[in-house]
Image (cartoon, rainbow, N blue to C red; front, side, top):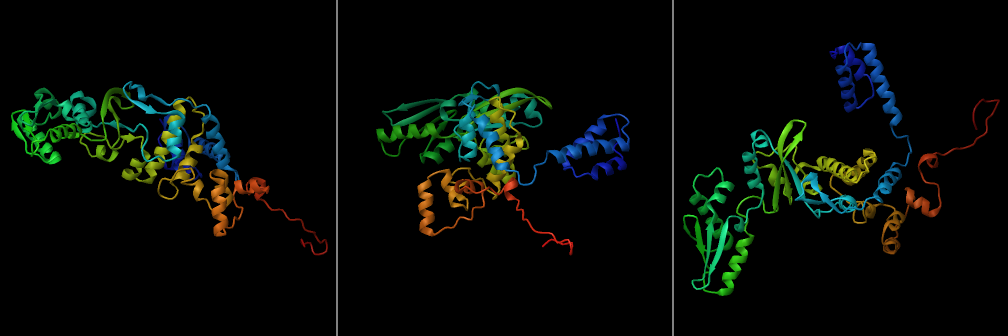
Length: 400
């Protein structure tokens, strides 16, 4: 192993490399034995030359290249859903429909889900992991016991299962106490008066009415007694990660902000497939990373992992450039362009041209699309270079 001395650090820091590449140079030097300052300088300069060579040339049409690089492989995408991370019970939209969801910046995905990582003893102990499961998964009354309806007395009777109560409320010693808590939730949600006897809870409508009795039963089924209402199911799996074996939770349904506050959840690694939830809870930079990761994962699942991530980074940058998440379509970025012809070339052509004529809009022909439409050279590459020819005077030695 080579010690990173001040001299080695000086030659690396003297380059024009970004921090990420400098860290990789340090890591490379550190892994090798007896690297001298001169050799470290050679390594750093070789990386710098490669880095400078791979940068985009001025006036390159990066948007068009990115669109082609993503769009062409996108024609190979057909699959609608797949089993998430080997969890057979959870289907998640993938393929082209998922890519469309992302670039359209849909408020809610067709199949919202979360990947919840655990911390400390919760990640190693299945029983402690299940405590987090019961804190996340929505618990309905049918999971806790049996419901019966006494039409003669106009009463709804609930017989709670003691084993289930102890399993889902492991930190509460008395099942009667849990039943009392459940009775309180029923009173608050339905506006009725309950009678509790051990693990049995009974209630009915204020006025005798068969219709009201059935209505109470239907409303009772929808009450969430524990967990998060939006999460219908949680699957727990033991997985081999870089840090070793640990339990990971996969959810059907998403409530990212609520999950992050639950004890035992590792907020630094937990994520979801709803970019708007990430934006609301973690900010626009996190949403940008989520768009990049989700689009890259979607392509890789289809075997299209040769798409350079920088094209996806450009799309993500455009979508989050204003500090919010905008879609690519006519209701977002394409529809808000200054150029009339660029808007008209995308969708609803006649409407855009008519509105522009009514309001007297002027198109300055600054972009690619509008210049192609009118047959002018686009202002990219050689099209953005102006050459002027002048005469040269031998007497004065100056150009006229």
